[in-house]
Length: 360
Ligand SMILES: O=C(O)c1ccc[n+]([C@@H]2O[C@H](COP(=O)([O-])O)[C@@H](O)[C@H]2O)c1
Ligand SMILES: Cc1cc2nc[nH]c2cc1C
Image 1: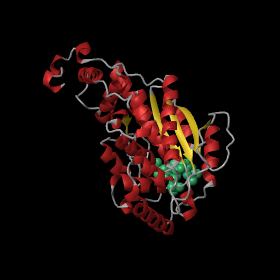
Image 2: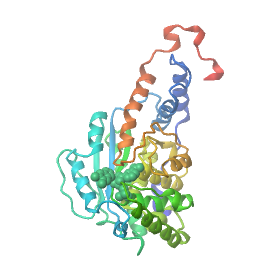
Image 3: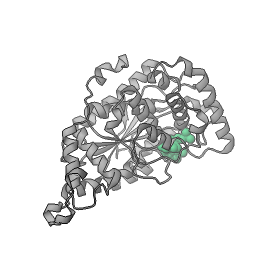
Image 4: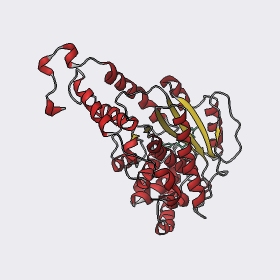
């Protein structure tokens, strides 16, 4: 167990088997063909186990958007400049970003968090900014490690504590999101080190990178993986070598889901890398995670397969911000409504279709 996180990680307890069993039984009695809502049924059962309660409520839901800059952007690995991170983050606090529009529709409270944007930010009034700035961006990992081990631990603990705050405020479900120009470069490098796989197949165009940029991005990542890989003893070393404050913070958010027993929705590529880091830090942490969609980034499906988390949506999305995670919430709402209110076979008296004992 990672020494610096021991006090938090020792609080984690496994999902509640009894609540899951009750939830499975409830699904088996709903007047519809067995397992016909597929992954939605499994996700509701999972939520019952996390909350230790077969009465599933998704009443209060929040979105944590962790925002940070990445020093590696100096190396020409992105299509847009670093200044975009600050502008989009400020717009989020005004309710003016893609995910804010989607969250309004889905009834999700938005919490933009400054984990390390490269300048001071001015908050709007729609969704006040949570200031958890660790530094004004990471360092350029082509030249030196992105951050110190202490900073990585601080970012992870910040993510855990954000979940603690949402837990105190009665949240039933938390979606993950991020914003940070260059964070697909940090994520591909971290994924390559976590999976011990060739970075080439884990690297894509991020936010619309051109061919020359993609070639440069792949070179930079390949060099970094060769440079830092041998010295990394654990996931915190990986995050400090090539990660970002958003990536490390989200790792903490996933660990926090297990600690505070709140289901956490993955978003896209960056979020999935953080989820994998959390699962590696505390095996079993994935039992507290729900996959939303498969990012169109090349590593999107690889990470979900590694985590064993089947997605609800495949729509070719790769926007980030938490858009995929928020898009999955209305689907979970529908499933929870069927689970909670649909008639049973007994109610509608279709004797012939009653589930047999051994099928449930
Ligand atoms: O979540 C995804 O799957 C995803 C895939 C590609 C890009 N993004 C978003 O685009 C930004 C990172 O892209 P880039 O090219 O600057 O590394 C960052 O703000 C992410 O939210 C997000
Ligand atoms: C405009 C813009 C919005 C984003 N949202 C998430 N990543 C983004 C990248 C860009 C460039």
